[in-house]
Image 1 (spheres, rainbow, N blue to C red):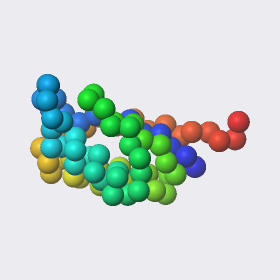
Image 2 (image 1 turned 60 degrees about the horizontal axis):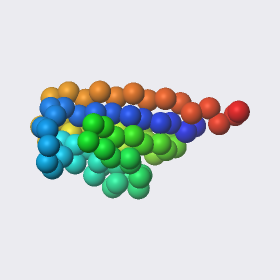
Image 3 (image 1 turned 90 degrees about the vertical axis):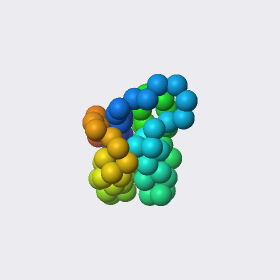
Amino acid sequence: MMLRAEFTTEPFEGEGEPPAHALAARDCLLAAGLDPDFGPLGTAISGDREQLLPALAEVLDEALAAGANRITLQVTAEDDRV
């Protein structure tokens, strides 16, 4: 099953370099062999359930450890039967 996830990490820090918690989240996905769409207001990623779910668990852990105080996550199952 394919999944699409979108998440934001907070606090936002305004202009300039992305905060450490956002970079930590991105780096978890890259380390898992995924290709995230990393942006200033959030990150989107699609992948196979077996690969994406463990990577998202790591994202939550690493982002919190790097200073995130809130993570908003939305996961959608992409129906490939159409």
